[in-house]
Length: 320
Image 1: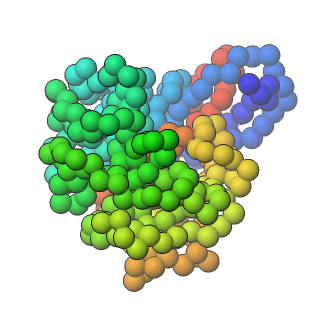
Image 2: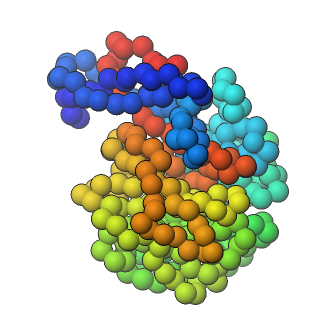
């Protein structure tokens, strides 16, 4: 663990408190991780802290009715009103080792969760009623990590490791056989359907470092979307289909680890195309793994939810 720790500078904005990070001299104080669920307006870049806790939580989904966030912490799925307050735990039955790959069905009746409670300890994809209840296992092979739901609600997209290779797969919501969509060497991850169901966006390191790609929903016509020196992960398309937000690590970062200086970048989609020259930095933050692993756009396509992190001395009070 690094001895340098982060202090938080507070900037008051119209929406609330905007945390920024800078380093200080070394200290013997124990560092404690604080997690903050934030939103950012894409028009202004204004950030608003909804909820902060001296604990580790990850990966917010924004409900389709705009009322709640769903995120994971300590193996459980929690619900939080968009106004903030106290999170409540969703009953996921025997699935008590949920990770950060979860999401809401198009009809808002179900949650897809990825959970490692089964005997082999590997992640599998389950379905649970959004209000809580008994789970139903969808993927029979593991590890499997949910990432996308087709707009018609009939198909789930997920990442699976099979024979040592991580690739993109699809499987019927009702259950059945999985179908492999990518076969390139190297890690493919983060599949998410476009709102019209035409494309699946994903990230791939097949070119040597991680970039954003997309393919037709049947796996055909795979094409690279971003062309930069950073390592790009987890593309999320706005509900109106006009924007793409994604997570960018530095060129020296391998994988998608936590506790890194990262950026959320924003791209405009016009006539099914992205102009790389016009991709902008929406947010700079301390985070990475857990920041924006799953779909988190507001229903009106004006904001994005994400999690930022702070490492603070144990004697420093949490920032609310």
